[in-house]
Length: 356
Image 1 (tube, rainbow, N blue to C red):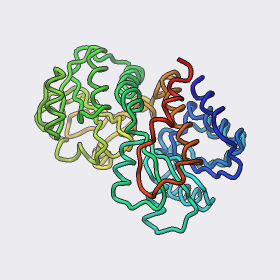
Image 2: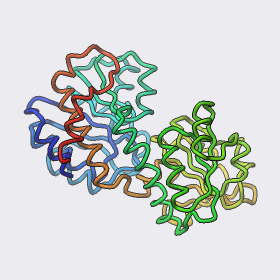
Image 3: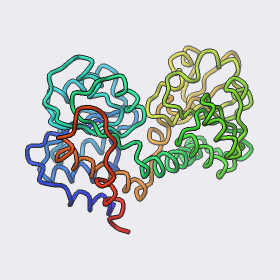
Image 4: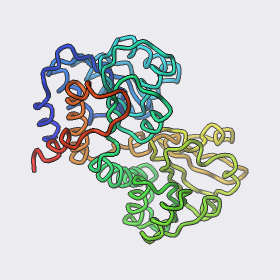
């Protein structure tokens, strides 16, 4: 990952920095964490999503010197305790995906020595909108390089790679319903067609719905589109987009999956009130009044829970930007006013250009 290596080499001396991270802990995070440790930072690792943790990666990073409290499928109580432990560790800076650390600090009105933070996800930025941050937080989800590369291209592409690997099916002859037409949904739709699917879109926002029509997709209301779909993918960032009211509308044999950041876009708890059981790894068959519904990866982020997520070369760009953002929050960024700011272009652009 040459861009990440370059960005790590550009970091200042990090002695005295205590960086608490709430991240997807898979193999692609290793170059960043080992680089931070080599530059002198103390690092505490916990996860933003227990279903995406790779235990071998956590073990490796702990052996390199990171403090870690995360494991695959850790229960809710253990996850909450890990967040509390990360904050009790007294971090000076935060690097987050989902704003869980910041939310706990502010909801519990905790005293904190945090000087600045980074936030990487749209769901985290939405969460921060309901808070009044006491320190500067830099949003790098809305950067054109993050939106245009990871959100628009990689999520959808790797979701359908993973679908074919997990189900042993292709999308040929399948009607694929994409719920939500933000950048992730746009990528999911385009990749589904590239892999042979026939695509429908459901989108509540009239502007995005119109954009989907101009992009050539058939756009229908969710309750109508859901009756025609063989595969349904949620990409909204909202909670319980598909739930109890929709179960009677699902076709026999339909697949449900989610590529949003959190696991609650599909009301999994309500769906699992019906008889269910695993038929393949990451595939549950649910008997909904005589019809079979296949739930993939328990409704968690499918491409990273059941698969490997972004390719190494694409994520190298993403990770280099994150690394540059960390350099900013331990330096000039810590002097910014409290609140949410977009990560400045001059901070991240050099990391993107570094090996071109």
